[in-house]
Length: 100
Image 1 (cartoon, rainbow, N blue to C red):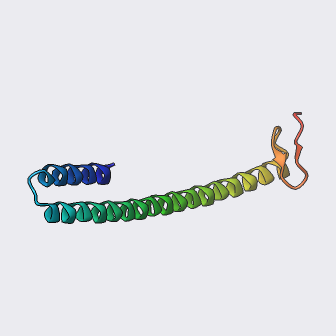
Image 2: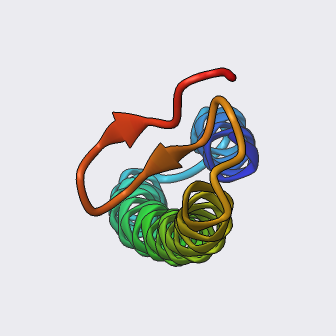
Image 3: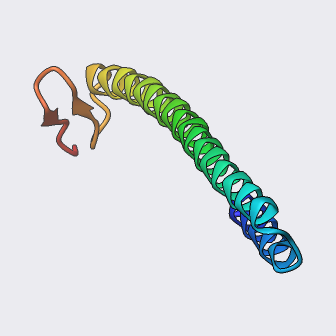
């Protein structure tokens, strides 16, 4: 968003200046505006990759955390089922321990 604002400001400034320029200066200003637009596009693409890689790392962390929690819960349920606590589910058989 910020890159677009900067690019638009640069193009507007070049357009205003172009009105008071010679044709050669106007052509140079247009060329500079095109180069600035291309650079802004490159920066935007890079920013998108940075954001995507950050999201990927966050998703991996969530996935790893969820796996750790699931393993801990499974261990707790296995222990509870082995002790015969009503309502527990034995992860090995997926059967619930009946209430007394």
